[in-house]
Length: 123
Image 1 (cartoon, rainbow, N blue to C red):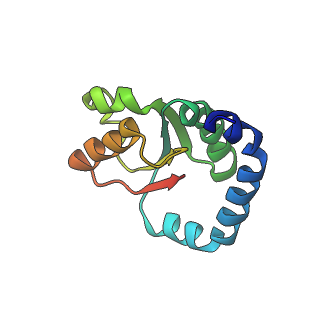
Image 2: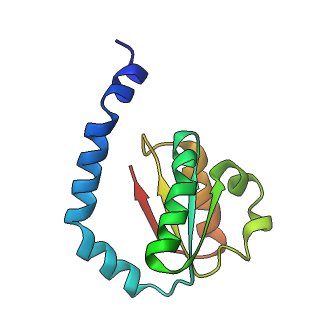
């Protein structure tokens, strides 16, 4: 069985584990978000993480009441200057299946060079 097939078959189990873990860390996450001065949430992703970004941005706006956007990490990585105004006082939410997606990592690094914004990554 291929890795991709195995991941697809186990996605609901993995999602449940992720949900349970995030729920167990809820108070820490809420405390962290309250401790930083943010005016928006920016979700960045690549591949399947990007597909999840739109839903995450909508959910964040719905539940947190903050302006939320989603962008392809590769575009931010290559064209940060076009996004710099939108990245001020934002919280970056970066979903990644592997945690080593180079576009996501580099987009965060480019952003951090210009603006120190808080980041939460869900891997």
